[in-house]
Image 1 (spheres, rainbow, N blue to C red):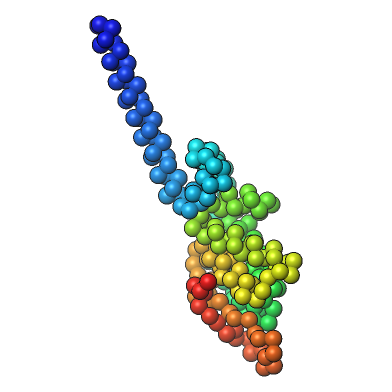
Image 2 (image 1 turned 120 degrees about the horizontal axis):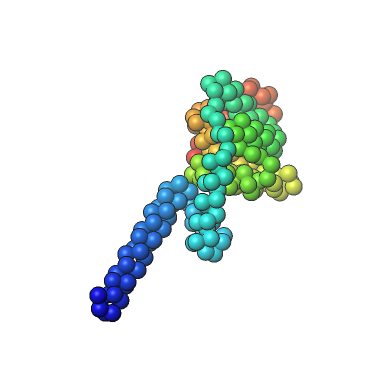
Length: 206
């Protein structure tokens, strides 16, 4: 084989290898985008590097595979749905306390499904593998909850927090906990006694 033919052969082989590598990377990228959705773009923005972001997301996938994620029993789903309904009723008179309870309830549900709950950032990373679609809801709810503890959240903020918590709660539960509504808080000047039924507004409003 002549030198020219050898060079051409080497170039062809290198081009084929490059095409294979590019194809593998493209397939991996598609899988990560399908799995993580908007979380993919968020991690890319946070890391400033697509390759570093994909390494991070692959590491999340590997870590998630080691977790023992369990479905809820019918009894557990019923119990959590009833607890969530109580949260919505409590919101009428005590929005701040209701949001704090919602945060605790979501955390308990996360733990019962089999996710670690020690570190908030790690919790987000673990949830992102199977619950990326509702992860922004959790972030927003958590941020409002922190402001609420500091006394910096208005009643409408708290209502939105409950809407956000509900999104992740329903995702983890596997069904809507109660009717698709979120209670409005009782006006401060309202003197009517509590009847046990919460006025409700559309949960999809923002």
